[in-house]
Length: 262
Image 1 (cartoon, rainbow, N blue to C red):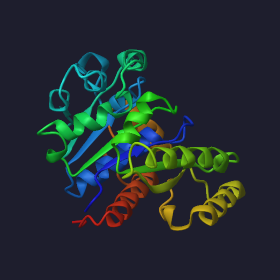
Image 2: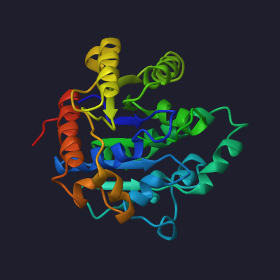
Image 3: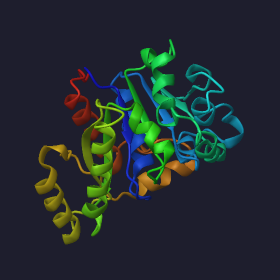
Image 4: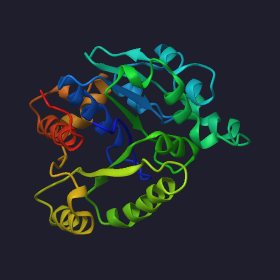
């Protein structure tokens, strides 16, 4: 297995990035992979979805990017075996200003991951939940990643936004991170009864071929309910259609990166 750090990214909000990070990470952990989730969004939705309240977050992504703390000092173990998290809060908003004069501002996370002795080595996979913006935080995530996973809502403007994002990934790959590749596109909020969803799927698969995961994530109320309980949907209701889809996605993803699914 050559790839282990992945950005979950889309500059559009509300497409299922955090839901995908939480539930894909949980499903991978259930397959005995050691997984670290890093919340890169100042809104901290990933942290909330894993039951870590703002009062319990302590050191987090802000401290890592601003070099105040080492990666291992910010890790919080979740109640899910094999799954750890580094949380985020509104402090992360200040990173853009703090790093503006730093020549290495785009590679802070990469350097931290490379330099820490117990960072990458403790984990089989690190998933970065990016904010819905192409800013310095997202740039740090992509500069540190081996691959980008793009959740794509099956809607009318899907391909338009995807084209811009792919150009960004190519640009970073050709400048500051030649390891970065598109690892796959996930169709989310998919409604097979909706002709538009079916048309978007057809167009995206024609455009990107095998880069699009076979597994589609359906619209599912249990996926929406789980974050309010502070647990992944796979724990909240492992038999719902959304959970079953993320289990299937995890297996497909792990097979793609040559991880032996147990």
